[in-house]
Image (cartoon, rainbow, N blue to C red):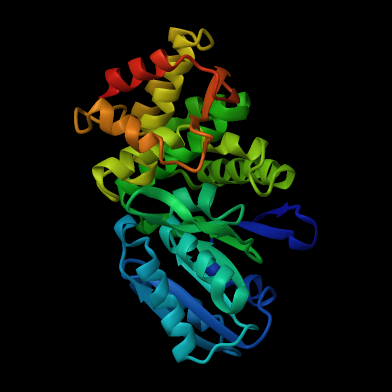
Length: 358
């Protein structure tokens, strides 16, 4: 097992990464205060791991709520099901919520924990590659709105993150590939050595070599933890973690949540950011080709295949948390492994990229 510490002062917490961790009760129980535990999961994950998690918590009063599965259910209405379960079980402010599932479950559980009785503890147990390397770490929680992705939420840090890579055995190929998009993001935004590791090992990673997966998850979480420790509330450097996301969120919002998986949309978004970076005079055509090659070898999409008009795309981009005073801030790349935040790009070049991809 590898252990990282996300350093946020009194809000610091460990990230455990390894195999067979869901059989180690103490990794969870030592982070639970009080006697009440609510496990939040979904219809896909519950049959696989819910009873296993319950078996670790024999000394606690345990209840659970099983949510519908899918990005389209990441709404205030679904979060209300968590509140219903907590109130029906008469859980008080000493309770702990456990998010057992992928990024949607984690985001909604964290948001419910941030709001229930003005804030209770929660623990992340991510079961998808995407949630293990990204959404479970850093305390971003929230839900989607019909007009924009993740527009309603709060920063609320978990007490720990328990990453058992054995849960990836039950993940289908499409979901696994979608998680690789967020892994690749860390190589592109600030870690050229990690990018080289991914390029050298992508075939074996896609064949789910456990040793390589643990290395990739550990490095992704290390890079994210370092950035979050410097900028918890995304007032500066943490925005770099949104590489490809403004483009990607526009894809998800325009097509409808769930048509493209989040990681699939981010794949296209990162390539769009690369193309704009090339037009801005930073990346070379060879570097853009390297990015595209890595995405394709990860079985990820590289276009929206004519499903969205350019005007729809630009309109959706304008409804994003990263829009400040009407300016769309984007994460662009100076070179592979070096990204920066910009709203100084040429708008005509952005229009060109959107037109090319649409």
